[in-house]
Length: 365
Image 1 (spheres, rainbow, N blue to C red):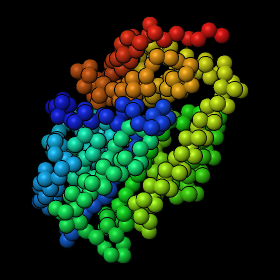
Image 2 (image 1 turned 120 degrees about the horizontal axis):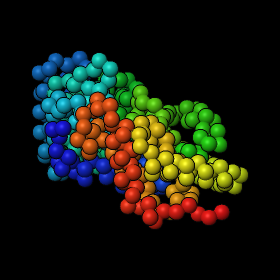
Image 3 (image 1 turned 90 degrees about the vertical axis):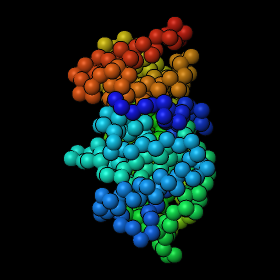
Image 4 (image 1 turned 90 degrees about the horizontal axis):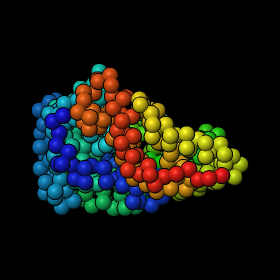
């Protein structure tokens, strides 16, 4: 690994500290604004020298922005694959910018400017993808930080804007506000009560969509869903955020109700599921990432229902992050392709839980 994690403000994972509102159900809130430079070819059609010029302009403007005063700058094409995947696993860059897609490659000029819970991806699908990532359900807080950054960069960079269509973007579905807001939410109660399909179908009927743990193109693991707006044109930023906020609050309420139904109608089944998951994490000798995520989901449900005491959600969030392949390879000093990563993962999980094991005991019937 060549990346220096100490350069990442707050390690780049302050969004996982479980300090935000509804942190036991909502892991994080992300808001992204897509922007492009006026009279400049979109990234996907630009030449290498065009992308380098875009990077220089955006990074130069970022260094002058108060919101990014202490930001770290990473030239993504200068990082090896494991480093790029590590940034992706921390939800700091997209799979496209990291060049992790099948047959994909890192574009010249690709960069990340990171200042705590806000940052800018440079030369992704659009010239700039400004983003704000916060713990818990925090749409307004995340947008306030991003709005300041948008104003600061907009005063220094000529953004492509049309009086009728709003901000112009490489993909027409992002035109208008250029805003994409998403909430990463844990919904095991709705999955176990088999209500999840109805809820997800309802989302599409009100203009929202869902994705997996890593966003677009990723699969749902560990009962984590990313809920986000589908369109950006024809509505203001406030309207988009208000609509998403109302729907997410309803989903949180449905999830809380589903958990209470499980406790009321099948308490022994839920307790067995929760403690079985904890036992496997505590004593397994080999774990795949998908299996780990599913087991962490069961334990997280147990913590949320107060069946497991003295085990913090932050601990579970950190386990979710550091058991991903690139993080595990970094911690264990192994290669990404090491066939023994599953063994190293189980060892890491066991050791991480050892400090708390003495204080966690199943409750007597």
